[in-house]
Structure formats: structure tokens, C-alpha cells
Image 1: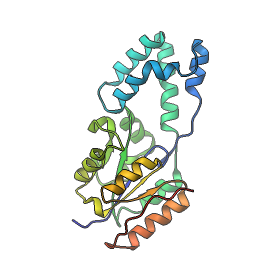
Image 2 (image 1 turned 45 degrees about the vertical axis):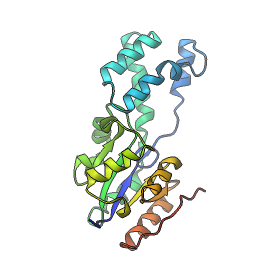
Image 3 (image 1 turned 135 degrees about the vertical axis):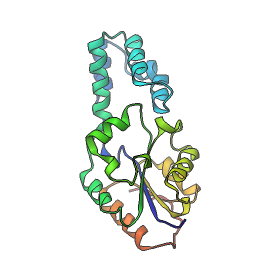
Image 4 (image 1 turned 90 degrees about the vertical axis):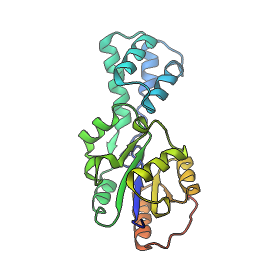
Length: 216
């Protein structure tokens, strides 16, 4: 299998996800010291990211640990999803949509239970790939980047070799892991450089060069 493949991250790449300040807001609302929300929910956040709990259990734990009534629990989770989902990176999404005839496309994202339903409904990421299964979420495979297993599982799902892939992510440790596995990789910082890197990858055919991530 020598089919070229482009694998992209979601948050920070296909989505713009700036901090909204929702956690400090809730800490002020609840009269809690800074950092308390994440301290109390650290294991819940992790469990949700690898699919060890469902959304209903997340809500139960949030309500219990922060002592929130049902309406405030729903408001808290709504703020969580507002930051998580961000806004679409329209330019990059449009560009990637036009690549389906030139390369196999996949998505590998550290995620949270409920992400697939929301992101497919809002942004139609399933239309970027040949099969909805080619969107690989950490909460569905039980492992997060930068664990090499996440990348290996993704290549298996897509039916491609690591050597035939370009991986695009905005987090340097994830890019480093991709490189150690034999992928090409690009550290996302803006659309212009990312689109240029994709074009270079596709024009190079099978003659791939190992490249360290560049920061700007």
C-alpha cells in the first residue's frame, strides 16, 4: 500500500479553539480558588477523553463534585462544549475537502465523550473522509496522542503505512511521535504554511523526506 494519506487533528487545526475563560468564570461563581475545578474533575476529564465514562456519568460527577443543581450542571457543560467545539477553520476545511481525489484523508483527535455527535452535526467532518470510521477519536479507541498506539491504530483503520502519511497537529509532542513512527509531520501554526506543506507532500509522490517540525 503506497497510497498517500493526510491525517489531521481537529482542535486547533480544523477548529479554532481559543480559551473562553469558562473555568475561571465558574470558579468565581462558586467561590472556589483558582485551579479547583480542574483539581476536582481531573480524573473525570481523563476518563471522558478515553471513553471510560459516558456523558451521563460526567454530568453526575460534575454535579456531585461541584455541588451543582441540574440546571447549573447543564450550564456548566454547555460552557465546556462551547470552548471545546470552538469555530470551524473554514479555509482549511474547504481546502481539505478538495483533496479527496488526491489522497486518503483521516482525522486523529484527542477528544471527549460526545464529541463525534456534536462535531459531525455542526461541522460535517464526516464529509471530509471516505468513511466516518476514518475519524479516529481518543474516547473511542481508549488511547490519546502522543501515545504511539493512537497513531498505529489510525494507520490500521485507514489501511495505510505510516511512511505514506503526512500528519498535521498543533501540539509539538504529537508531531514528534508521528515522526518517530516514520510519518511525515507538520506542526500547524497557520493555514498558509499548512496548505503549502500539504501541497509539497502531494507533489513529492512516494519520495518522502524525514523532516523535524518547524516552530515559528
